Image (cartoon, rainbow, N blue to C red; front, side, top):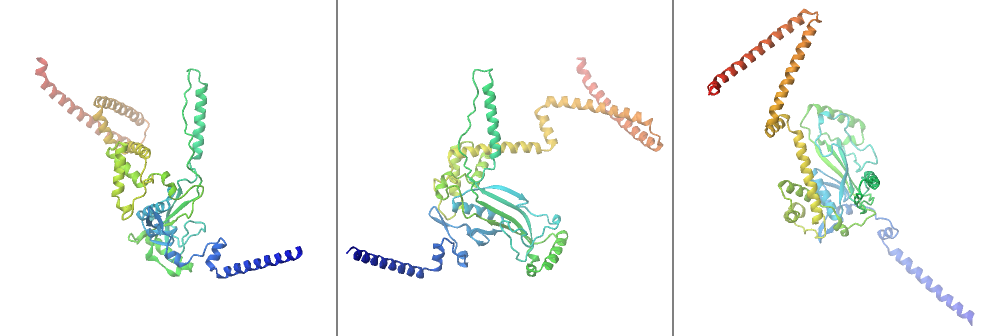
Length: 445
């Protein structure tokens, strides 16, 4: 009886297993290739539809997309713009959409500047010679020159100041130890050091930018595959650099944006820890130079500027009040005002150093008139001593010189100098006599 029951139970379990396998096979046959690739953990292949219909990102309930600011793009993370203004707008839109903030880590060569074509030698390119260059430049039949590159790090990227921080920490420890050993006082001076953890978290996200200038007048489709055409066009272009000044130039700023971050939280959760926006920082600098010194007054001016700014949020909703990038705290405003004041003082010091010496001397004489007279008297005595020493040197050298022509020239020049000195002394004596005659009646009284 038990064997019959166990055999019956085994048959039921086999039927259930077969039915599950059939259902699994049916689901596999009905699944689309894109679903299969997603199920295996692979990304679906990129198509032309993906390039046309970009993924939009929401910001404060308003649809925005940074890819619309590209002049030409191959994907929503790579393309180029044609001016520095458009580049600034592109980076700003990308940071707003992704709730991130990037800082300039390195700028090479003449990035963002106009070229001096007459000094350009053999630096004409048709394509990238290095495969690891970012962003990579392909050959499209138009020659170009590379002006420079710029790399931006995530503000929570690697700590570039780590070595100097260790040096400062070691110096502070040494200073504390010396104060501890100092027995001249009954107390030890103690400096409080911040123990706040650094916000740097080694995020690898970077923005790569390359500034190139193309010359569309020298476009040569045959140069894409034929090296001989490239050499011919390059030689002609190098000659025209020295002969022509009306060569048509086209600026292009190729940008490669990061697709992910690491080691820190991204999204709207980071809005409360973002640094202040660059435009607002420049606005603070401007107002500090105009004389605004109150932090609360500066905050009101920033709110008015943000609400009246049409170039950034034109037709779109303002960011959330929790976003410290556009709604900074009083502490952030105070720190930026202090930095603006320090920059203003540095600029004034540099302008004084760069001011012409005549203006500096005139201002010094106006401020310190008594010292000015003393300086004139001292300069007069020094000049007289110098003239006398030179006269003695000429007298000693005249006995050594054996060339009569040289001696005649020296004698003629000395006679001219003697006559000029006699004339100046007679004019000074005459003016002194005139003054004494005028003052004589008053002296008698």
